[in-house]
Image 1 (cartoon, one colour):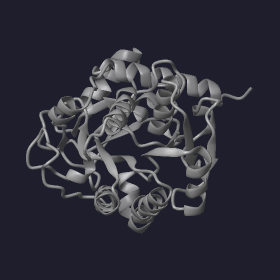
Image 2 (cartoon, helix red, strand yellow):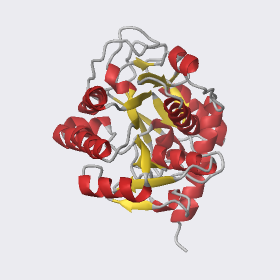
Image 3 (cartoon, one colour):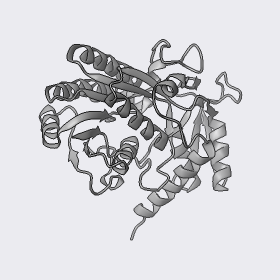
Image 4 (tube, helix red, strand yellow):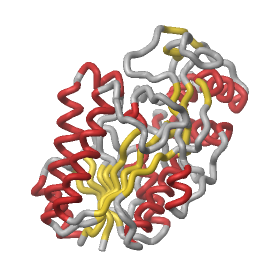
Length: 330
């Protein structure tokens, strides 16, 4: 039996594939390679190029590889893009999730782990935010993910699925072994942008908003190392395989760092200064998002290994240097 990882050639998905492969678990990847890359994957892992909404392809993949569980990452994730193209986000994130689930149910899959986001909370009334907080997304991206959660919950009730929804806070860093990392051109992740600017890949970087109700006026986020996040998925899968009930968990560290904290860390870790431009707030950015992580710690066999901003930035910078070497003319 194999685990199907959708979006497995992308940033978080590729870390998950390495995590599963390292553990000796059979895995197959489904990715349309719109933002993913084959070179991020172990050579031994099969990759099917296609879309999660292609039900015939999903059905064939499930049958051919005897898939018994799906970890579903494939999605569009850029908040500003979702505001300019909401229908594209609802199609790719919500509709394709529904189509994937329909094919999975028909193929006998009964265990699903869904990649969700803290964006479902919008501007939370209290921080740290708990899983039972009101969901009030302020971007089509967040709404598309919340709608997908609802689709999954309703399908589970009707068809006997068991699932875990993992609501990510801000994912950053790279594989400590240097095998994979954030590789998408023009990515919008703050730490990715900062290390690109450190290395001169960008002439400058922008800070969006300095007038938030936070200590230094910039947004506060709960940054989780991508390898810890992959391990959380493994723990969620083990939980389901032990017979655990369907559940939703926040994935973060339970404390936050401001944009200015991140920039200072990037300067300190790299030993380099870099130019920063200050701009107005972006639509869809809440002032602070920090996870209450008591539920995931009590329910899953998971403890973070890399809960340190210096470590996260160091790993991101190391990957960026490796990526620059890969892309250099030969």
